Length: 301
Length: 274
Image (cartoon, rainbow over all chains, first blue to last red; front, side):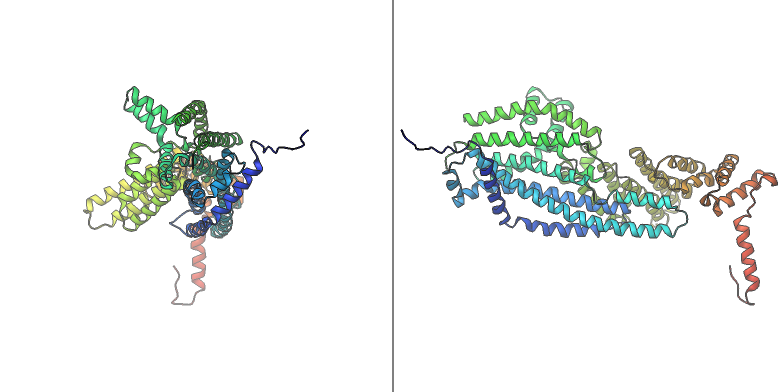
């Protein structure tokens, strides 16, 4: 009777995925990704000193809008470019062979890589959020003090008016609701990174991945509008209608995540909508990861 | 090839599942004011390709900030057509930012109107016409701002000011302040302005008197300000209110004159105050 025990690695291990994700995180950090934060800081400070005859509320809104805009641009660029270089880089460094020669399923490799990218985006967004919240806090304090001093000189204003003005300005200061805007930016980037990963599994070069992912990203912002235009306004034929429908079915709708502007303008978002948006993003990421796995599963290197 | 086919089938099938959900979610987000309608054809033409793409990509605010910078530069060059066009775009991009409507309106009714008034390159007869046109444009901006932001008093207050100072239409201004006063963010002085302006509106003197008297009778400190007393005193004269019903205070202007007279007497010879 043999007493040999055969070790069977688990089919899917979160620990292995985490190892891959953390090494990807380190790999991306070493690419000096976080240097962008210095540019972000300069931009936010510049925005906070920009005053084109702005009202007190507008001064704070400009900081919020510029910061969220910069965060969006950073996360989209990063989602596309970092995901595009990951697999080719692993191939170039021959790390890919080392990893795949071990009992690591290819799905885990892809999920780990994607998680690493998302981790960098998440950490960067959190740092940027913290930074601009601090700036907003100090600016809010300064603006309210100035405004109160100004109103105190005018007998026309009552204590109630002053309190109301202070509350109105404070509504545009640092706010937990802004975290939802940051989450929406993150979700959009997560979907974009998943799309870029799918493209990179069949792409011949990183440049190809970047170009195709960018094109998909752009189409994903207006394909519904364009399809409506072709089909309804231009009364396109059957072929146009079918092509339009295919486009809408295959390409993600990135417009749905564009709520940062409204949240920055003071709109509140219900928990139900946040949950639905997160679930939709998760669905996109899952579908594109499975599709990437189909193409990557028996790819020869 | 088979794998590529499988991927396309996967994307199509999952698309069929998610598109109805997305439609419903988009509807909810639009209903709650979180998603704005995409830029219309006219706005797309005005914005140009890159700005349209940025606006579609969720960077409306950034495009708007850029447009404000552009308008600011045009304002310094007194290029009013550009200022107007830019603010029309800004307000279309961010219709719920009430400050943009107010700023766009202000550029028109205050800056552009004053600028054409002193512009010597424009024939004299045309200047007044243009001035009025710019004031009307400013009013239109404010009315649109009200339509897009019905809950706040800010554009109402601005409109009241323009009607009062630039159009001298006190009757309309009084009604505008009355509307502003219905908003929770209206400053306390708005309530008095309804009275002051009604007092200047021909035919509304009695109504104005009753309104201001009611404020005065409430006795709160800020409602017995010199302006309230002055308006009441003038209306008492105009409406010939019986002496017994008149308020006990003296007209603030009379008080001021008396004080000045007394001071004048105390001053050494040769020194005068106005």
